Image (tube, rainbow, N blue to C red; front, side):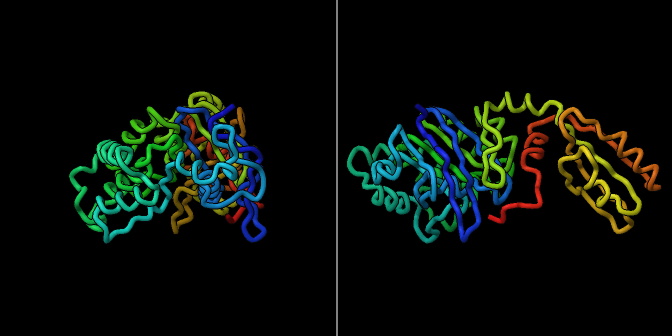
Length: 317
C-alpha cells in the first residue's frame, strides 16, 4: 500500500468541477512533481491532501488511514507551504517560528530539535532575529519552508515554492528541496519543467481536473519522443486563425504578432505526424511570406503541451 493514496477524489465549487475523480499513490521517500496549467486543479488537490478543504467524493489515506479519521494526528504528519506563503510580516522570524511551534503543540526537546533542524536546513540563521517584512522574497520562502518542516513531518506538500524568485534564488530553493527530500516524502507543484527534471523522480500531470499522466520523469520524457512541435513565422492574411485549425495539430501558442501582419506561432502535432508539408502548401496557396518553418526537438515540454492543450470545454476553476 502506498504511503499517500488518493482514490477517486473530486471537488466542486459552485457547480463547477475543479478536481474530477483523481487517483494516485505516492510511496514513502518519493519526491513527486505535480504539474498542470493554471486552474487545472493542482492547488485544490493539495489543499485536500493537507485538510484545508474536504473532498466532495473519494478518499485520501495516509499510511492506510483515511485523513477524515486521522484528525489532528494526521495533520501533525504533514507539512505545507501554500502558494501565497502567508507570513506575519511584522513578526521576527524567531517569533513567527515560535508561534507556529505553539500552534503545533511542540514542547521540550522535540521543540528545540525542531527549531535547530528547521533553521539549519533552510539557512536562515543570519535573519533569525530580523522582521519578516524586511526579508527578500528568497528568504521569505526559506522561512515558509522552515515552518513547514518545524515539526519534522513525514509528508511535505509544497505549492509553487519558487514562484516569483530570481534564477539564483530558484537554484537555492531547489537545493533545499533536494536536501529535504532525503528523509521525507515530498509533493511539489511547479510551473517550471526544468525544476521537475532536477528535483523529482516521478511526475503527475493534471489537466482540467483530471490526471492525464503519471510516471517516472525519464519514462515520460521518453514518451515525449515523437510529439512534435513546429515553429512557424509567416506574414499574410489569416495566418494564426488558419494554423489554429490545421488538421493533425493538437494545440497552438502565439509567440509574437506584429502590426504588419507578421505572426510567429508554435504548433504541437499528433505523435508521429509531420505537419510541415501541410503548412508549406498552405503558405503557397494563401500567398503567405514564410520566414520560418522549424521542427523542434521532442521534450517534456512538448508532452506537457499536448496533454494540457486547451479545449472548448475548459474548466474556469
